[in-house]
Structures are given as structure tokens and as C-alpha cells.
Image 1 (cartoon, rainbow, N blue to C red):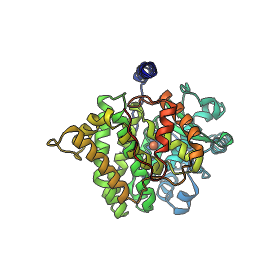
Image 2: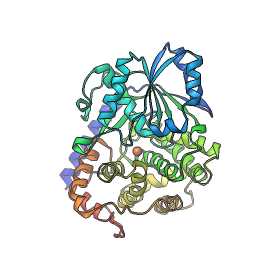
Image 3: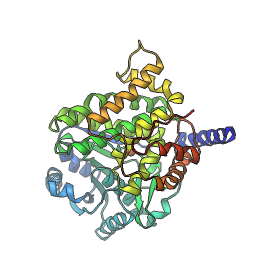
Image 4: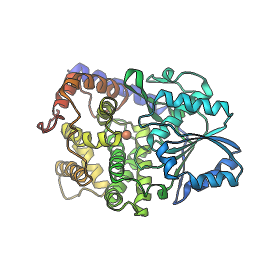
Amino acid sequence: MFLFRWGMKVYQQILKLYVLTFRIKKTVIVHEAGASKKIAEYLKKDGFTNILIITDRTILSLGLLKGMIEGLDQQKIAYHTYSDVVPNPTIENIEEAKKIYLDNKCQAIVAFGGGSVLDCAKITGVVVLSGKPVKRYDLMIPMIAKMAKLYTVPTTAGTGSEVTISAVITDTARSKKMPITDKKLAPDYAFLDAELMTGLPKGITAATGMDALTHAMEAYIGNWKFKVTDDYAIKATKIIFENLQKAYDDGNDIEARSQMALGAAYGGYAFRTAGVGYVHGIAHRLSELYHVPHGLANAIVLPHILRYFYSAIYKKLSDLSIKAGVGSQSRSEKENAMEFIEKIEALNKSLGIPVYTDKLEEKDIKLIAKRAIAEANSTYPVPYPITRKEMEKFLLTMLPNAPTAKGE
Ligand SMILES: [Fe+2]
């Protein structure tokens, strides 16, 4: 076991050195109510006259594109729309969007939607330039040469995909998630428009908000902490604790919505170089096997993982809780850390998020452990690496009403 932990830590440090070589372009954030109406001005300034819009049918039917389209018409920018992106976007989605882009000789992409739309747009932006199949990028180091210019308009506050360098694509033939990470996947612009988010249902507001919190927290408790990512993680955690409940209680609270949009982007900035961890490694399995929405899966798994790794991370948890205004200087680190976890559990409860998912089946635990370990141990700066057997034991405690598990 010692050799395993030591070997994995060396491997993580080598990966960290690789991450340090990243020169990621800074995504330009346009943060104001009605920001999406201004995209045409930015496209015109950048010299584009013919674009592909990638979205989904719900966004289209809600009429959320209206303000942006009016701007495009005013600026005489031609547009073609692909609106068939499904939750957990597929390789087929990308191939279809790619065809529209190439058939119409588009010059840039606007991704207008939630994380699935944005992820689909990123990889579409890669394959329209490379001509290579999507599966070619299912590698730990995908070596992406370039991506089409990408303007993002997130319509949920959670994934952070509007600023991150990763995308998760589903290979339906293999029932497998393909997380693709490369510095070239950083979008050029993020238009944070709270006016688009007031109609979000409570369930989506809750799940996406907790996804953003998970990004900030996994970035902070992992082993690739940088000053800049810590700062973003603290800001995101503070914003989310102050605004998620408000946005959930009153969807029309434009200020809370606006702050959550910013918090999600900050969470994205935190994890785009500091990485995520076992919460995401497990949540991806709950999505690919049971179709549990990504944010909901993270929200459920997060407190369980925090409790499991408590002994290893309580100092970082306490530090984050104080800096984010959740904890107190007057209490011990262990008290602050435990209270922080309890506050997350209370927030989950208040947002209608269950403690367990009743979809998890014991017969799937070996497969989930295998895939979660393969993803997390090879890619993420987890607090400390655990084995597949340890993961299986942990997952047994995620079965409904099982006792809490504790790591070392
Ligand atoms: Fe996430």
C-alpha cells in the first residue's frame, strides 16, 4: 500500500509539472444582465460574418436566443443553427454539428446553453478544423492543435464550461464518458447573462449550483493548488454559499442569479488547472450508468467524499471555510471542517437534494469503482490516491442508508 500511495503521488507531481507548462488563454468574461444581446458586436469586431450556433431544443423553444438573434440580424451576421444537443452530449451530436459548420463554411461558433451544449461546441470546434474523428481525442493528453473561435453563453450557473479546458462527451456505443482536457479548449468569450437564468427550474438551479461548489472544493482540497486557483475557489465558495439558496428560493432574484453565474465561472477557473477529484470520478459513472444529471450526482457524492477524506483534508477544509466566510477563526480546524461538511449537507437538504441516490445498485459497484479509479487516479490531483478495492468499499457506503465511511 505504501508503494502504491508513494508511486501515485510521484505520478501526480509529474502531471502537475505538465499542467504547469499550460499557457491557457484568458477567457474574456462579459458579466451583465442582457450580455447575450451584445455577442453580435463582439463577432463583428472580430471580423466574423457567418457563424454556427449550437444549442438545444429546450433553449430554442423557450425563445432565449431572441435577443442575440436580433443583434446578429442588425449586424448582418449570417447564422446556422444546430439545436439537437442532448444532455450528456454524444459523438453523434458533434458529427452533426460539424457537418452544418463545414457545409455552410462557418467561421466561428456560438455555444448557447448548459454544460452539455458548451462541451459539444468545444469538441465540434476542434474537429471542424482537424477533420479527425472524436474518438481520436479520447486520450489523457489529446494534443489538440486548435479550436474554432468559441463564444459561450451559459444558461445555467454550474458547469464552468464557459471558461474551462475540458469537455465530457458520451460514447453511446460503449456507454462511456470521455472526459477530454486540453489547454486549447478554453473558450474565447463567456457572456454571463442572468436574464437567461430566471426561468430555470429549482431542481436545475440546485444541481448546477452544487456542481459549481464541487468544482471549487475539489480544486481546493486537491494537490495541485496554486495561489490563483485557490483565490478563485474561495471566491466561488463564498458566492455560492451567499446566493445559491436565494436563487433557489426566488428564481427571479436577478442579483442572486447574476452572482451565481459569476460563482460558476470562478469555480471553472479554479478547477481548470487545479483539477477535480473523486467526486467527479464517481459522479461521471452515476451519469453514464443511470443518467443521473451531472450536478445532482456531484451534489450527492460530495459530502460522502469529504467525510471519507476528512482526516487528510480537514486543514484545507477549515482554511477554505474561514476564507469563504463560512467558518470561524475561534473554532479549531477540525471543528470548522466538520461544521463545513454539515453545512453542505444542510444546504443539500434545503435544496431538495437526497443523501443517497436510489439508482446505485450493488451489482454495479465493481464496474463503477474500476472506472472511477481509472479516471481519477490517472487525471486528478486527489487528496490521496486510493485503490480500486478501497473505492469498492467506499461505494458500498453510498448505497441507501449505509453507514458513513472513513478513510485514513
Ligand atoms: Fe462538474
